[in-house]
Length: 164
Image (tube, rainbow, N blue to C red):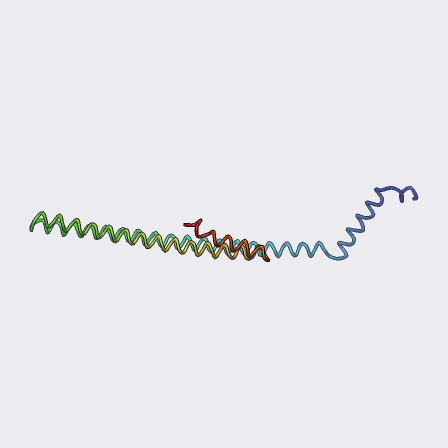
């Protein structure tokens, strides 16, 4: 027995058993597990929110692409109408026909260019807004304190330049 008291292995085993007993007595494994489960639930909720935002952005992109296709169809219709009118005007004189056709085609192209530019501007602006909102939510939930404020401010300031 006395030899056992001088054995370092005995004291390490005794200290370990006491430590495990203290952890069980204080119910720390349950508290740690609960905290980890809570954190996992929060991360899962953040991921779901980010997926919803991504799906919304994709839907908006599809809407803008549809608007762009519609604008192209409208431009094609305008060009078609201009060509029909040009055929009718050919009977009245070739010079008037050429002038009218050129003018109408330019107008159609200008409208198409304006529609494309407007659609792309709106898409870019909304994409930046969605990305900034998602970044704010993720960063605000992930980091706390002064460091978080500084990181968020730096990221938000740099975001528009990176997205454009």
